[in-house]
Length: 183
Image (tube, rainbow, N blue to C red; front, side, top):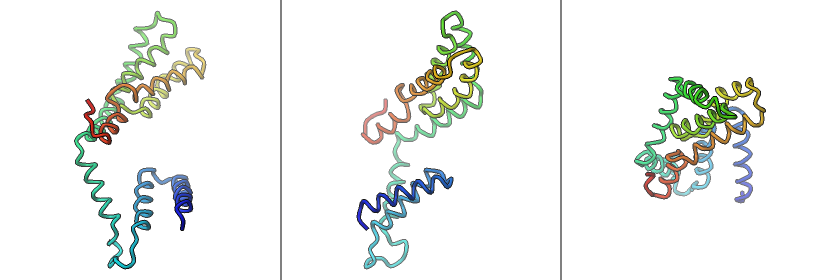
């Protein structure tokens, strides 16, 4: 098979497997191992099924990622976001900021944006902020008479602050790849 044919087959297989409901992370690992096995297949050198270079590369790459001190921050960010969400801190913060800004025009939008910014710095993840604030602030803003597009825009813009405000997960991954300090 030629390289473009393999690429098209990889893309179609990825789409089919994800549409079947398999998690993306496990799908990517399985496809990497499967197509890597095909790429490094050498019938003359192989004595068993596990005598392929892809398995050595997989173990080495996994160990190098796990031994990277910078990437330790990512599970801690996820844990902090989980704790903040389960302790209902974001809900209290949103309503406290809403009360504090009640004399400003668009007080709920200001409170939602400030809450998104604070929660984004705590978690560093855009999806978590947008999802949680979409469930928390969006219905409240709609009941208060805000335009649906405006409320959705405020929450999405506030969630995107998670990438921009250091230390975000994206900046930590960038620092690990570029081999610079994330501080």
